[in-house]
Picture 1 (cartoon, helix red, strand yellow):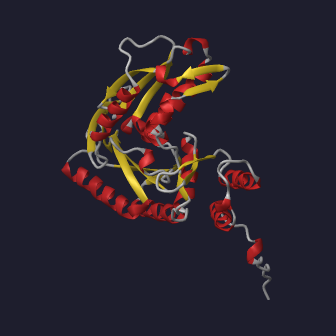
Picture 2: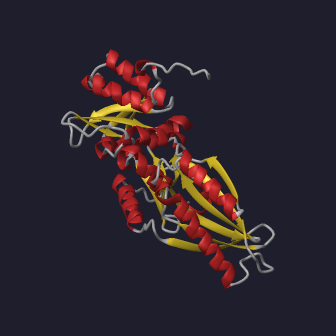
Picture 3: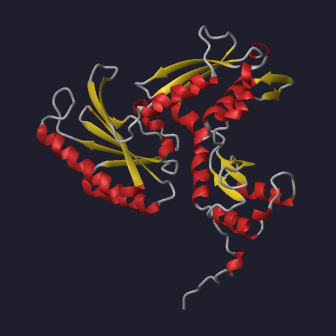
Length: 339
């Protein structure tokens, strides 16, 4: 007779940290007072840390509810999937509580006086260098405050990011801003906070996440390549799709390494359609590159979805193509295409 391990009573089973948090919230946590430190806030902090040690949380005024609990990644892409999974498991908002997975814009914060590193900084005195790049769908920002020359690089950076988070919200800072540079010399034509918001709104209006862009490139040896990608797509549009699935397929090529003829293109198109069908709603094809007789398809899936991993491996084996899967929550493997 085979031996069986005695199952644990349900009270002893280790639950998923997200499930444990919301079970606690339903039983006790919803009674927490957001205006004071208490044993409940200590429990909340411990439970959030058990989901991911780098998650940060805060209470705030709600929009549709009296209070808001925000559990966010603090701008760290690798942590954002954990915050998003926490939010997706949240109960429906009540009159008392609503929930968010990132800090939302609070334009009033941009006019307050901030005390940091022994300095008092009236944020209303801040001016900006604003450079829009429609090709990248990004806005590059320089941030200047009269107190910056007296502060360290670290503090200047902290103030700049705090201010931009208040102006735009944590997600839109990541989604729309490119280079962010604290300045110690005022910009020639200093813009206002409203100029920053307006520039981002303008770039946002130009985005179509379903628009495909064709680009040609050459490697260091001058060999040509061709890329087709969704220029407007950002990792924040799919924050739980944190696993990069790289499919590499060989094709019949011309001497320059690009597909040989219409038949080669049609075969690659059929492969692309199959790949998208296998991934389905569980993943997204961001783009592909053709170069030196190989096409590289870039697909992102949920790193916690073992079923889609298995389905893609099975399809790759049947198709006799290479498949490499790596964690990539910030979509760094496709930044050269999407920006």
